[in-house]
Image (cartoon, rainbow, N blue to C red; front, side):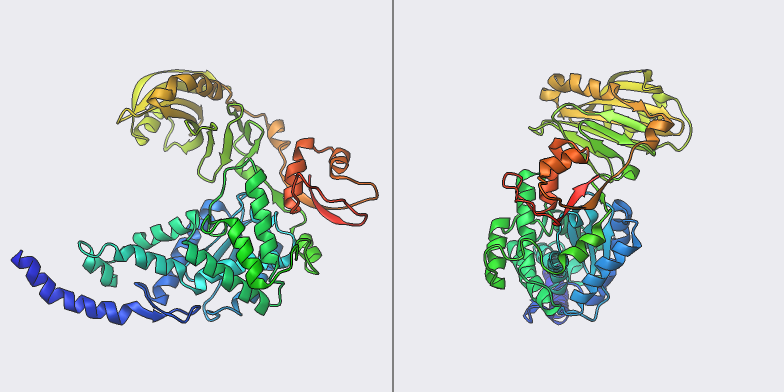
Length: 484
């Protein structure tokens, strides 16, 4: 206790001085004095280090024209922001996920999946403005500071002495904000800032509310798993955000719903954009996942929800009780199928219960049962050897639920097959294109004429910002987005 008392009396005053001198800063956006544990230089450097990881994980959409267009809109907004002096970087990610987020220091990302659901440049400006707002108000730094100050006590020195702080701590806070959104206050603040930036740049403020209404429809009707991001944060709820934005922007009912003068220029920019999965990352169609470049296909259980993520393909039942993961491991050297299965089991920290080699989908295969070390989960493992590549399927559930799902796991594993070169060549990406409405056209009629499935009606309605249950009357010469 004596040594602790001595430490407090000698070290704490110095740390307190550092706390007071370094921590207080005027927030560029709010003009309030904030206590923060990171300088602007550190903030920008953090974004610079994290940005390549984001680009690598998602991929950058291969269209210089679209990249330049989005960057031009972003630069127009950022130059009117509260931090026009930092260098902003806007990137379109090659992902079907409906998402947008910002890293510290001005690194802002938007997916092609989100661009597909926008209907004007003003809507794009509202979304980019929201993410710029997170940067100008230093939300990630403020959220990190709030988290770090809870640790006062055991980690006091590491909090107040920058040299002792862990870069990983801030990175974790940033990625948490990217994946699950900021606090209610921060999201509301970003909305408010976005309205100001959009108006200063000459955009319709009401378009932001129109975009939020589209997201609300997407949340209601989409079969895909809900995406909670900075843009889609559940605090506050979308309904309240729409109301707040409408009120703040003084928008009349229905304003900007159909887009303004910037609707057609925007639609021409996204004409031909890849919609949904890109064949280079594999395509989900119904129950099947097909990857033409890897020349493989897997069929998941009926009714399961499938996510084609950058790191794996995941599927789950409606009750979130049973799961299947499909993945690929590049082997360091050629080995037997039994040795390869052993590598997977060891890497995942599983305990093998039983298993045997076989032949599935034209490849050497292994099927076995494992359990987690703590016994809470059981796993059905299927491995398929393709030279130095190992495809593998993991079907897992709680031990109590495993047996009733084992048949589904086995059928999924048995469905694996290699595609022929001709089959792989015929896998094409879906793309958006602009369709000019003719007299007498209805959406079901257009789908039939284009040879598209009737089930696509809901998706086409949503990308045009229509409620699938309240379709508008189409008028001749009207330009709408369709899929081919």
